[in-house]
Length: 348
Image: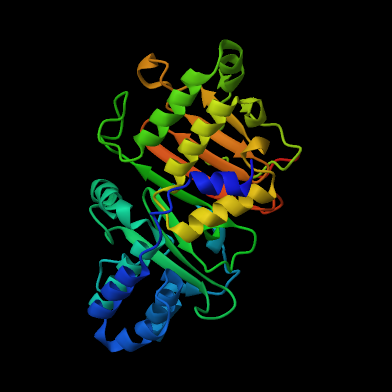
């Protein structure tokens, strides 16, 4: 599926509203207002402003070399977990000044779709007590230089911005978004979960498949563990039904699902995902799988499903609540550092 086709299916009204980010940053941080105004106020430019406000003590705690290796956690910049802090200080703590906390919030808002800020805040309120609470940041490399990356990590959220410093990778590397909408063990239908609508559309697509297609798309056993989002490459063996066997209307609905998956994020990241998909042959090179295991309520509304290609994994896990693991690149040789395995890419 071509880049043009996928791009046309995405809602272009969701562009990053950088002027709003700039306004928040400059209003909250008078001392660096001029610096923010002089640069196009992207999240990356605000990371540079944030970095310049930091003391040596702060930098020692949360700033690292580009390829910093933690003795226990491996290559820290690319690490991914569903419940972690990448550094010890919480954003909402005395470690950061009020101005720095506001800058970090502005960076977060720039990394995400403005139309989604209220829903992100709903997720954060339920899962960590609100933005900045039990959330941490790390900066790798030197902001403003050739390579740097900002990572925001907490329970149920790992997001990144890098200005394309991380070669070949969308989002700057693997990300995770999740929500415990109605208790640790959610009920079937996932009431109040801000991401469940994505699964609703995926299940509609399953209903559009004919009997033979459904049989191939539904994986009865051996559902992958949720952190298994390393790339398998062009010759990898994928679960489920090949997208190139979808009918036209099924492909159109898959594009609708992709739009929903990308919608929470800023436009530049959406575009980078489309570019990476295009390089590997588009969605036609992907498979889509639904998993019978862990079907909450045994209602045949599939809580767990996955879209996967040579260098593309979007893994929606709905048991016991929603975790969504995302890893997208234009190169399947890129390796992943997760909490369970340092390298998850399987040999074909």
